[in-house]
Length: 188
Image 1 (cartoon, rainbow, N blue to C red):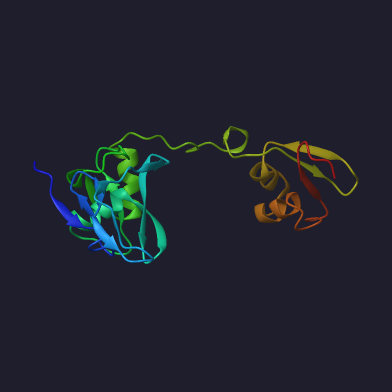
Image 2: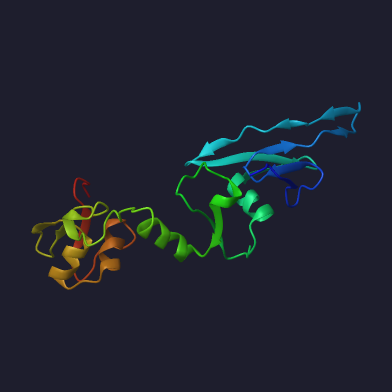
């Protein structure tokens, strides 16, 4: 496959991008106090969570842009505002046009689990086994402290709404059904 170059959408005449994901700033003359020539070089992307980003500038305004989105806009059909770009092989730094496709957010998640065999972190885990659960302490109206593995467990056993317990733990509400709540390890 040969490398094909096209203008970056919105930056025509300033930047071009290839179907391999390489970006070049176009050589041009810039007016100012002195006329000078800029561009004509391949831009070096930086990584952010595995995704390649470059900084583009136009009319003294700078914008960080994802390389995979620019490649998809230039070379992949079917772009819509509600769609996201999926890397077919799961490698976020592989920005070749034949590795990219436009999908919905739902399709992107399904692809991650079914095709790439990603594992959900907390599927089927409740209470103390859930990685996001924080232990809490319930203080009854008579002052008795009871420890729970998390808000859901306290809610089930006391018959109090989760959100109400959460509000008490975060200090947005003083009591719920006569009980005071706090995160374990935090003194009131």
